[in-house]
Length: 226
Ligand code: DC
Image (cartoon, rainbow, N blue to C red; front, side, top):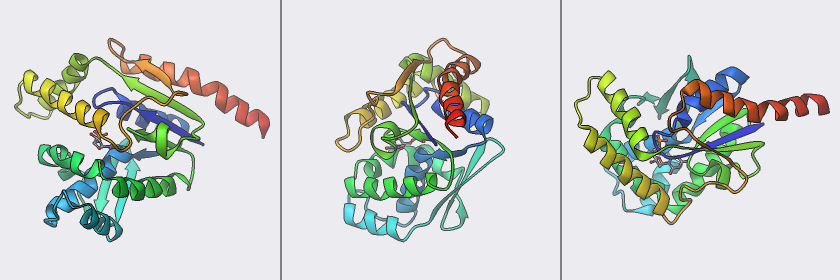
């Protein structure tokens, strides 16, 4: 069984996807972490981020491993733990070079489908419902106003003692939204059959309950059929 969750940065999809995976005993697939991991490797190895051929070859020779435990994901590139590095602003700012390359995405899609083939999975990203798991058992598109998403991100950064202004966080989120929505390959878009949830003004618990309410009938139906 695959549950696909898409949405823009700060929409709450990572938190909800992890909670859901834990609650259901499913695997959790963070596809953003995979794009981050390849971006990190390309930067670290000095590959030209504009060169699609070079990036494709790099992907072919790179191992990206995700380990999900205790509600968090550890990311390994060629056996090196890069969990912290892939979240650095320098990496985040360069992901769009990688995520807009068609052949890189095609390889990523195969890898993501392979990860999900080993068991029940909650997969989150930008193209889960539209491309990677177009036949998912259930699809969600989580969204929230830019200001709310920026407030959440700002609070997270403050908690981590990172000094940034709220205005810069808003700008950052708008830039990422723009890149994710307007890119030519697999742009961020709601799949027609996805359940749309606007999380603005909702607590995590409220969003989780909404998601669970949608999934429980499907789970019951499956048990019934078996
Ligand atoms: O979920 P995240 O913020 O860690 O994702 C980082 C970037 O990776 C996001 O801005 C766009 C890209 N991405 C993508 O293109 N497709 C996905 N399925 C997941 C992420």
